[in-house]
Image (cartoon, rainbow, N blue to C red):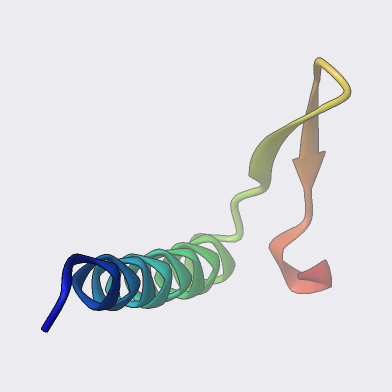
Amino acid sequence: MGIKEQLKELEDKLSRGLEEAYRKMVLFKKQKNSPVVISENGKVVRIDPEKI
């Protein structure tokens, strides 16, 4: 396996891991009825987790 294939495999694993972490965070926020806090155009924004 060449370096390009190894990097692609690593990129795929990282993407899947980040997607899973996001999914778990949203489920946790829904259970706790807590807003998801993000930055949008440099401003702090709170989003109801039920809208995600």
